[in-house]
Length: 112
Image (cartoon, rainbow, N blue to C red; front, side, top):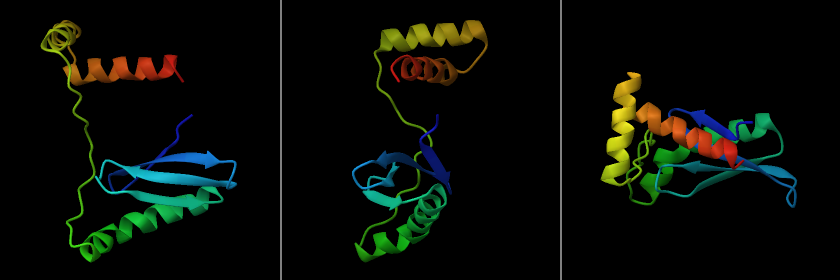
């Protein structure tokens, strides 16, 4: 099950609030708090898209620049772990990013 939505490069995490009986979304990776909701998939998608379309104007009102969406996240790891992952990636003929992403996907799948 996927609880994210993408629009114009931005990603939002969507959760259901039983208390409020609606979906609640939060855009991640902007450095700003962008929250929206909706009572259906169609409504929350439309509200997400509206928030992203309005994001530059919201930032201008605050005297700030809008942040571009984060497509990659930097995760600090020890040099030893990175070296091992890099060797594994070279051995498998894939970018080290793929090895690390696969490891994170496996972790999430095991702990979901």
